[in-house]
Image (tube, rainbow, N blue to C red):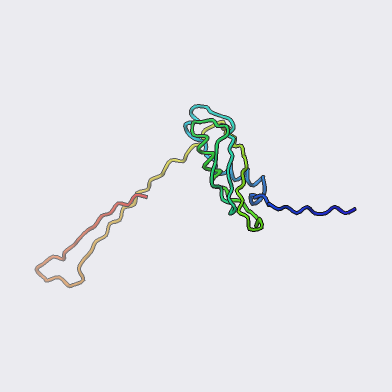
Length: 149
């Protein structure tokens, strides 16, 4: 006997690339909050989010949080996600999914590179193109600019 292919009435949204890409997206955009890092907070934030019929995350709810800015950061990253949703026979469906976002301190704080300021000075002289009269000296104007990069 041949198994028949099951057709679904409602198609679930899929993150482009699958679950591995979803995890990669979350952790590549996640920034450990400074307040949580200083307080030594580590753990997992559980978030439930809603996906509209176009694949956009429209709402997030923290089911279990850590505070110290971790909840807000996890919600910010989840709201950035975009899903692929197949047509569901003209029905606009609101999907609910859950995700857990882990906050784990690294051994060291990533050192930010110091901002290097370069200074460039430009000096030039402007002279008038008309020939000077014999009894007058040519007018000379000098401009100096300092530009910080």
